[in-house]
Amino acid sequence: MSNRASVGWDAHRLLLLLVALALAVLAPRMARADDEEALIPPDSSYFARRVLKTAPILSLSHKITTTIQGITFDSNYDNGSLAGVASAGTNIFNCTIYVEPGELGNRQYQFRFRMTGVAGRSVTLNIDHTQNRRPVISINGGPFRRTTAAEAPTLTQLVFTFGASENTAEVAFFFPLGYQEIHDRVSALVAAGTGGTTEILGKSFQNRDLWLVTVTDPATTDTGKRRVWVHARAHAGEVTASHTMLGILEKALENSETGRRLRRYCIFNVVPTQNVDGVFLGLTRWDSQGIDPERQWPNPYRIPEVGLIKDKVDAFMAGPNPIEVALNLHSTVGDYADTFFFKHIRPSVTANFEVIQQRYIDALNNATPLFENLAPQTSQLSPNLFIESYFWNNWGEAVMAMTHEGHYYERVNSTAYLTDADYVALGRAMAEAMIEYFALPPLPSAVGEWAQY
Ligand SMILES: [Zn+2]
Image (cartoon, rainbow, N blue to C red; front, side):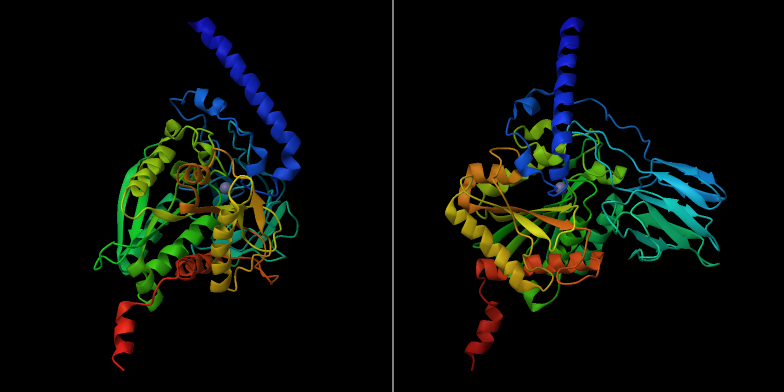
């Protein structure tokens, strides 16, 4: 028994080593496209064979609290992430970001931590922010803002001068949103808006809630309503996805003619955070076990988050209002001219499906100046790895399923760096674009009023 287990383990390690080597060879290309769709071999046997671990492989070495030179560095909270800090001279600190192990290799760029005791001091942090030239800072618990050019003089340094009343600062890779923060923001939107309900689909591997928010007009029957599925943050650090998701919910829930029209003719189902454990832990990409939650569709019950989503998708597809649009929200690194969709192309899909996808891309373009499709990306859809594969294999052209990638660079047609508010605005436009994509009719009341004259 032990002998056979030992042989299996060696084979497994060899396979991991080969995967790591392959990824290392492909690393320069990988940095371009977050989802790496073209780079992953379409062989599911590795995933199907592997046995789920019974405990997370991660230690909490990315959660620290330590006081150096009178400054307390703290990453030991929801979404916090900093592996280490050491003195490198007076008011100079070497910060180590967490290198996250996973079965598909290591990932690192995410960081988020607080510093207390900085009042009146000039502090230099040696920290790698190669993937985002201008990380963000919050002073005394205020809103996050992008760092200035002076505060981020190089890709491995941040320099802050704090006023006498500025004793606490929180530094993060990009406008952060943790597990509880997303829960609170979504709850506030649902409470203030119209037609929103929430449910818990189930528990994550580490027993956190996997949420679903549904938005539609409860006063009208669902007959004929178009169902839109959205899920965000399959990858833990990709926080632009959360801001975009919040924008979609904000628009769908708001008390405006557009909001009422969307609710009258659509049903939005939004999973605010898929990788709840990874977000809580402050990871860059994988889940708490080092598994890629994006790529488990050959064996969806391997991790609970994907299995729960599959069950819900299957139920909707078997019902009277099947999903017609599915948006999978991510972030990527790189100096892109615009955010983008991965449009799937022939021969992996049909020519007509290319047209269907382009109709939504164009509808978003028409709905906002924040998207001009200046960095369009295409991919050959994997035969089975992604949720888009699952939709295509089972329902073909009936479901327009695409991944959208935000990034941390500059706003389209501008040298201003993108902010959290930009992604909320982009999300609002993604919801509004459903009007053009579905050619939704005007509200019946408006027709009625017009017909009176
Ligand atoms: Zn991603």
